[in-house]
Length: 146
Image (cartoon, rainbow, N blue to C red):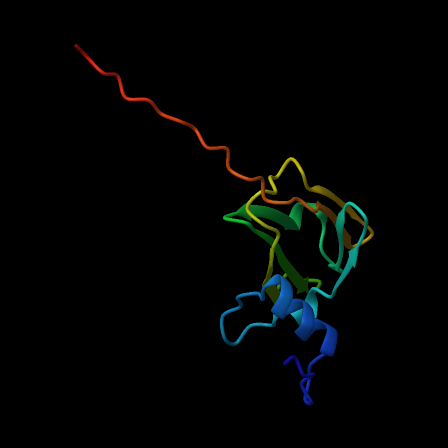
Protein backbone atom coordinates (compact mmCIF):
# COMPACT_ATOMS: atom_id res chain seq x y z
CA UNK A 1 0.00 0.00 0.00
CA UNK A 2 1.36 3.39 -0.93
CA UNK A 3 1.48 5.79 1.96
CA UNK A 4 2.95 9.29 1.96
CA UNK A 5 6.13 9.84 3.90
CA UNK A 6 5.76 12.10 6.89
CA UNK A 7 9.19 13.76 6.79
CA UNK A 8 10.67 15.61 3.81
CA UNK A 9 8.84 13.95 0.97
CA UNK A 10 5.96 14.54 -1.36
CA UNK A 11 3.14 12.01 -1.72
CA UNK A 12 2.90 12.37 -5.52
CA UNK A 13 6.66 11.89 -5.94
CA UNK A 14 6.35 8.65 -3.93
CA UNK A 15 3.51 7.43 -6.12
CA UNK A 16 5.20 8.21 -9.44
CA UNK A 17 8.57 6.88 -8.28
CA UNK A 18 6.94 3.58 -7.36
CA UNK A 19 4.92 3.41 -10.61
CA UNK A 20 7.41 4.72 -13.18
CA UNK A 21 10.67 3.73 -11.46
CA UNK A 22 12.91 5.61 -9.11
CA UNK A 23 16.19 7.34 -9.73
CA UNK A 24 19.64 6.24 -8.70
CA UNK A 25 21.66 8.90 -6.93
CA UNK A 26 24.82 8.05 -4.96
CA UNK A 27 24.76 8.89 -1.25
CA UNK A 28 25.77 12.42 -0.37
CA UNK A 29 24.25 13.89 -3.54
CA UNK A 30 21.07 15.83 -4.06
CA UNK A 31 18.25 13.49 -4.95
CA UNK A 32 16.80 13.74 -8.42
CA UNK A 33 13.27 14.16 -7.12
CA UNK A 34 14.22 17.27 -5.15
CA UNK A 35 15.81 19.00 -8.15
CA UNK A 36 13.89 17.42 -11.03
CA UNK A 37 10.27 18.10 -10.11
CA UNK A 38 8.12 16.20 -12.57
CA UNK A 39 4.47 16.29 -13.65
CA UNK A 40 3.13 13.28 -15.55
CA UNK A 41 -0.15 13.63 -17.40
CA UNK A 42 -1.97 10.81 -19.15
CA UNK A 43 -3.43 11.66 -22.55
CA UNK A 44 -5.45 9.63 -25.04
CA UNK A 45 -2.32 8.72 -26.99
CA UNK A 46 0.24 8.39 -24.19
CA UNK A 47 1.92 10.30 -21.39
CA UNK A 48 3.24 13.85 -21.18
CA UNK A 49 6.14 14.38 -18.81
CA UNK A 50 7.04 17.95 -17.76
CA UNK A 51 10.28 18.12 -15.81
CA UNK A 52 11.53 21.33 -14.18
CA UNK A 53 15.25 21.88 -14.74
CA UNK A 54 15.88 25.48 -13.65
CA UNK A 55 19.38 26.74 -14.32
CA UNK A 56 20.14 24.06 -16.90
CA UNK A 57 20.69 24.70 -20.60
CA UNK A 58 19.52 22.38 -23.37
CA UNK A 59 23.14 21.21 -23.81
CA UNK A 60 23.21 20.11 -20.13
CA UNK A 61 20.31 17.67 -20.57
CA UNK A 62 20.43 14.18 -22.09
CA UNK A 63 17.63 11.63 -22.57
CA UNK A 64 18.53 7.97 -23.11
CA UNK A 65 16.36 4.93 -23.80
CA UNK A 66 17.70 1.51 -22.86
CA UNK A 67 15.98 -1.79 -22.00
CA UNK A 68 12.57 -0.11 -21.70
CA UNK A 69 13.82 2.62 -19.32
CA UNK A 70 14.03 6.28 -20.30
CA UNK A 71 16.70 8.01 -18.26
CA UNK A 72 16.98 11.80 -18.07
CA UNK A 73 20.37 13.14 -16.99
CA UNK A 74 21.11 16.81 -16.28
CA UNK A 75 24.70 17.88 -15.62
CA UNK A 76 25.76 21.37 -14.66
CA UNK A 77 29.27 22.80 -14.20
CA UNK A 78 30.02 26.40 -13.20
CA UNK A 79 33.16 28.21 -12.20
CA UNK A 80 33.18 31.71 -10.72
CA UNK A 81 36.33 33.61 -9.98
CA UNK A 82 36.84 37.11 -8.59
CA UNK A 83 40.15 38.96 -8.79
CA UNK A 84 41.25 42.22 -7.22
CA UNK A 85 42.72 45.14 -9.17
CA UNK A 86 46.17 43.53 -9.06
CA UNK A 87 44.86 40.35 -10.68
CA UNK A 88 45.10 38.19 -7.57
CA UNK A 89 42.31 35.76 -6.87
CA UNK A 90 40.04 36.90 -4.03
CA UNK A 91 37.39 34.21 -4.34
CA UNK A 92 36.98 31.09 -6.47
CA UNK A 93 33.84 28.96 -6.46
CA UNK A 94 33.09 25.80 -8.38
CA UNK A 95 29.92 23.79 -8.64
CA UNK A 96 29.35 20.49 -10.34
CA UNK A 97 26.09 18.62 -10.14
CA UNK A 98 24.47 15.67 -11.84
CA UNK A 99 20.83 14.67 -11.53
CA UNK A 100 19.37 11.53 -13.01
CA UNK A 101 15.87 10.14 -13.10
CA UNK A 102 14.52 7.02 -14.82
CA UNK A 103 11.05 6.01 -15.97
CA UNK A 104 9.91 2.63 -17.27
CA UNK A 105 8.23 3.26 -20.64
CA UNK A 106 8.10 -0.30 -21.96
CA UNK A 107 10.11 -2.44 -24.32
CA UNK A 108 8.03 -1.54 -27.39
CA UNK A 109 8.75 2.23 -27.24
CA UNK A 110 11.69 3.39 -29.36
CA UNK A 111 13.60 6.68 -29.31
CA UNK A 112 11.81 7.68 -32.53
CA UNK A 113 8.44 7.41 -30.75
CA UNK A 114 9.36 9.94 -28.02
CA UNK A 115 9.10 13.68 -28.70
CA UNK A 116 11.25 15.93 -26.50
CA UNK A 117 11.34 19.73 -26.18
CA UNK A 118 13.29 22.00 -23.84
CA UNK A 119 12.07 25.55 -23.28
CA UNK A 120 12.48 28.01 -20.39
CA UNK A 121 14.00 25.41 -18.06
CA UNK A 122 11.26 22.83 -18.62
CA UNK A 123 11.84 19.54 -20.43
CA UNK A 124 8.66 18.18 -22.04
CA UNK A 125 8.56 14.58 -23.22
CA UNK A 126 5.65 12.92 -24.99
CA UNK A 127 5.72 9.14 -24.67
CA UNK A 128 3.13 7.10 -26.61
CA UNK A 129 1.16 4.23 -25.15
CA UNK A 130 2.14 1.11 -27.01
CA UNK A 131 0.67 -2.29 -26.46
CA UNK A 132 2.97 -5.24 -26.69
CA UNK A 133 2.45 -6.81 -30.09
CA UNK A 134 1.54 -10.50 -30.02
CA UNK A 135 4.35 -12.56 -31.39
CA UNK A 136 3.64 -14.14 -34.74
CA UNK A 137 4.51 -17.78 -34.79
CA UNK A 138 7.11 -18.41 -37.45
CA UNK A 139 6.99 -21.95 -38.68
CA UNK A 140 10.38 -23.31 -39.52
CA UNK A 141 10.50 -26.34 -41.68
CA UNK A 142 13.23 -28.90 -41.67
CA UNK A 143 14.44 -30.03 -45.09
CA UNK A 144 14.01 -33.75 -45.59
CA UNK A 145 16.53 -35.32 -47.86
CA UNK A 146 16.08 -38.50 -49.79
